[in-house]
Image (cartoon, rainbow, N blue to C red):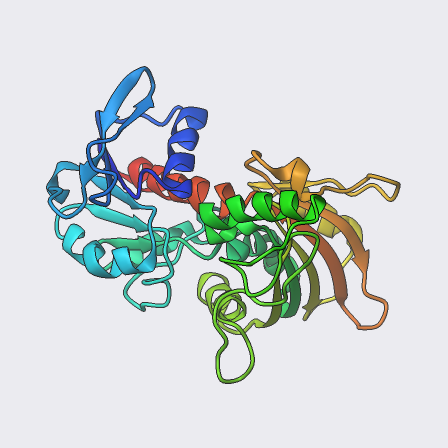
Length: 331
């Protein structure tokens, strides 16, 4: 099995290599690919140096599976060309709503990989990925009718430059220096911004619409979902406050049991100081953590949850590698 990573020098590309190590992911040959400005540079991995190949001239037939860990513009330009020679697992948003491209979270809808028509599989938005992995076992038991979610998303969701800017702004704020935002619409240090991605005509942002549309495609078209997505001054890991309305009556003990037994989930829910998970504790971990499980006393058959996960792992690199593992194991 030969593997390639397009966007190997970026946040998700490097995180994909970390996941390879953590999971002892095996391959025969590895090809690291990036833009012309990174071509020729070297990355050390498993005691070997790999030279970055130029995306513009790279031969996609060299790999059986190619991870696209780059922006949508790269996927738009190169993914279908690559898919003539290799299975593409794309991290960008470009193909997510394409009816001929399955949108996959292996713990939720691995069987949809069989619907692949273009030799391309899409990875969902990071905020969607951690949400559906928690919703799936509950939907199976009680059938979800409606979801209201407010996200608290780390700056790494925007890439390396926003992460660097948060650190820079924090230093300037503490030193009393003037702050000018480069990657955010307002100051992010010691602040929160209720705006991720561009606005649609109806007042929702693209990030909020992604959560709605992707959850329907992955889990169930009948689920109603409304979201408010907020950027917070945290480097890594997204958090979500989620209200779920079921069609069937539920039992809190069964909810906890279902989430505890679900692959990829871990329940940390003690009703005491510190008996819950925060973004800092989830960073670097594979699991999607669920805390603050409680009945919504204002609405019949409804509960509230707190969901936290490392967005660079669950929402990107880890999910992509698990897709690849599912493909390999099915052969």
